[in-house]
Image (tube, rainbow, N blue to C red):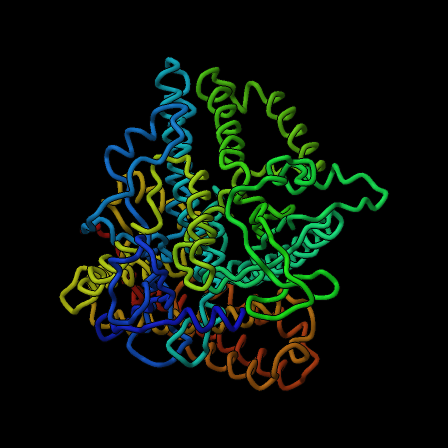
Length: 618
């Protein structure tokens, strides 16, 4: 994370009743433009993302859970927008978005307590489309598919927007910010939400995926940075990375020097123009008599651009050719073409038109016409190998990040930023999309409404209690049972939820269950590594986890959890070469077996009864 982003983004913590807290990510950046003239906040910042952390009322992070994530800049589409999104081949954004915020606008973007629900809902919608709507007449099939495509793209745009904000967020293990593990888990869940079966990934795997995704993103940026720099160098253009709203190393500009000539290096540069996705500027007659805006910059003896205000060897008059995102997985992605405003838009519209004709109008199916999609994938593969950016989802992710970064930026040249904003609007081909400036304005109103909901008598406090009772009921369930409960919940349109009964002891019971999960995750991570645990981790801390876990298991009656703990301890003992650690595992296993026998005897005599029941959500 760059120092620039750390100075722009910060967390603010607000109590949510006595046992939870709301963490809100702010950006201090305020551009001087019409987009955010109405954004007035006492914190002198724009609220972007809010996260609810359930602490159970103590300062011990072992029993903390992040439950909800709100994207405060999320703009709910209006009814006219939804109607237009169902019109095939309509690729324009209409209006700026809603001017007001109602109670429905504070629905969380991500519910980490029930990641399976979007999976069940998505499968249900796809089955409805395939089995009911697609066999109907062409108008119904085309309109339903157009609406579904726009809806999925709108959801992905906001998911990536939240990911972009959170990647710039500061982390802290003992401060008001999210911990590194919590942030990685949220980032992974947001990424997995883009995938149909992503909600089935467990929490431990999700945290590891979040960390791996961050490293992979850095690798992609470094590779694209060097690739774009080399392309500019081979074509006698000028490469300059730019920071947009604290996003360092994610975007770059390619400049054309006026009143200079191109010196051939003996090799063909035609493939480079395909990779850069622009026409050869050295043969463009418009640049010889350029009437648009130019920029005067200093360069050093080697011809490299110097930062603004730095004296150099000579001064050049430059024309911007394009702005590139370095986050695209395959290559630098052209976001803004300064010589052709419709260039990028035509590419997006062409690909969307082809998809709508094949699936919506003609009705080509993935099942019966699979050979068409095999041929299409092969064609895309060949195009990608020749420098084409064919990944529509990847392009949408880069656009999502850039549009909001421009709206938040205050450090770029105002005229240059305004020119980029006017040209990046060509990407807006989804009728459900709102203008970034309107989203920022309503973020302040949405944050104020969320503050009222976290008061002691607010609706969010009651929701927290329901989620805790659902967590109690789900503890120790098998994956099949958990998925079945999710199907019942979505099948009843949310009217049924499996929950424990209200009880004053629920908070203490949940504290015990969460601590069991915490220590079990520590042991599982050591076991999954497959190496000696005392080498990878402090032996005394491992023994502390084993002792605490052993003491907590007397309050856990789930056969699934008890079997899981026993298997993990056995595997840990086999991997370890530390006699003290082996002895600790053996004692914990013996105590667990003793308690298992006691539980079986008590169950047989009718002493132990189930304390969890299912009740209908209110």
